[in-house]
Amino acid sequence: MSDGTLLVKGKKVTGFSNAEEKLAELDNYVPFLTETELVNRGAIYQKAPEPWAAFAVEDGRLISGQNPASGGAVAELLIKALKKSA
Image 1 (cartoon, rainbow, N blue to C red):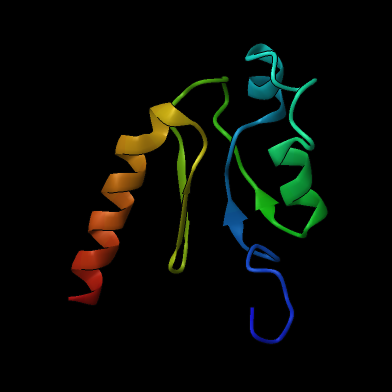
Image 2: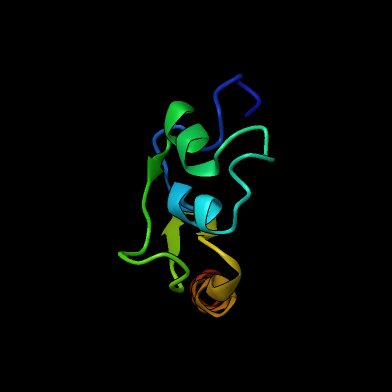
């Protein structure tokens, strides 16, 4: 942010879970795990109860999806947010 704080600090967000990274066998190739890094940067990380389930989170104007299956859930939150602001 312009004041030097991180965008995700104190915000509800989601992204690939550590379990999904391991199931996809990416944990040995990526430089960091998304879930771990978001938590380390102060995010309020949330995830679906099961890996690969569609899951999206909205916190103000920040909308995030957990994985590729979450595209529809992200779109629904985005459309809802756009209708609110219209």
